[in-house]
Image 1 (cartoon, rainbow, N blue to C red):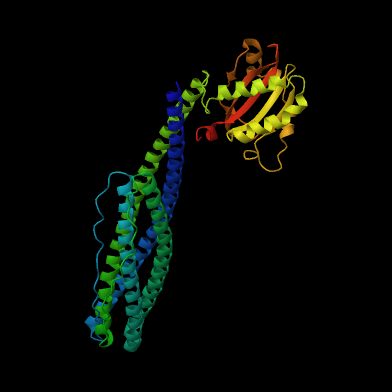
Image 2 (cartoon, rainbow, N blue to C red):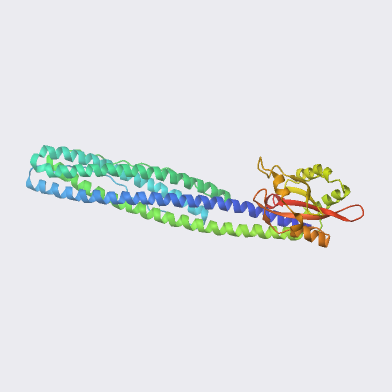
Length: 417
C-alpha cells in the first residue's frame, strides 16, 4: 500500500508538470497562428498591389512599343537578375520537425521579400528614368510619363508593404524561436534556430537614349512585376501551409494537455483512496490527522491553548492550507492558516467565523462513525484552488468524543511533496 501511495504521488506530480508544459506549448502555438494570419493578410494585400503594378507595367510597355514603332525615340535597356523562391522542405512528422520546417520556410520568405524589395527598387528607378526619357521625348512621351509616374507610386507602395511584412515576419520569427525552445523542453529538446534570410543583388541597367531605352525598360518592368506577383502568390501559399501546420500542432497539444490532466486526476484519485488506510508514512494524511486529533484530546476543555498547536501543524506541513478544531456544537474554536497560501491582507477569521461545521458532511460522518474521513476535491474558500479536508475524531482521556480535528490540504502542493 505504501508503494502504491508513493507511486501515485509521483505520477500525479509528473502529470501536473506535463500539463503545464503542454499548456505553455498550446499557448505559443495559438500566438503563432494569430501571427501567421496577420502576415498572410498583409501578403495578400502585397499580392494585390503587385497585380496592379503588373497591369500598369503592361500598359506602359504597350505605350513604349507604340512610341518605338513611330520612331520618335528608342526603349531603355536594363538587365535584371532574379532569384526564384526555393522549394519548401517536405512536410515534417512530429512537433519538433514542424518547428524546424517553420524556421526554414521563414528563411525562404525573407529571400522572397529581399527579391521583391529589389524588384520594387528597380521598378522605381526604371520608372523615374522612364519619366525623364519621356520628358525628353516631348509630346510623344507625355502619356508614357503619366503611366511611369503611376508605376513609380505603386513601386513605393510595394516597398512600404514589404517593410510591413518584414516587421511582421520578424515578430513571427521570434514566435517560431520561442516554439523551438518550448518544443525542445517538451519533445526531447530537438529543434533548429531560425536563420536570417540572405540578400540577393541585381544588376542595374543603364540608360542609353530616349524612347528606345524607355521601351526596353518598360518590357523589363513588365517582366519583373509579373515575377513579383508570382513570388507574392507563392509566399501567400506557403504561409497558408504554415498556418495549417500550426493548427495541427495546436490540436495535438490540446489533446496532449487533456490526456495529462486525466492522468493527474487519476493519480490523485488513487492517492485519496490509499488515504483510507492508516500508514506510518509522512505522506499519510490519515496518520497526520489522527496524530493531531490525539494532541487536541490531551487539551480537552482548554480550547484557547490550541492556537500554537494549529500553527505548528501548518508550519510542519507546507501542503496544509488551514488547520482547525470544531467542538461538538460545530463551532470553530481554534484555527491557523498557512501564510504561503493566503494572500496578504486576507481575513481568514471571516471564513472560519461563518462556518457551522455541524452542517458539513465530513463533520457528521466523523461524529456518526467515530473515524477519520477524507472528503472529495472541492474549491477552497481561502485560495480558490482545489483542496480536500481530512477530518479526525478528537477524544479526551476517557475516550469521549469532544470535537473534530480538520486539515484542509491543497491538492497541487500535496502531489509535489
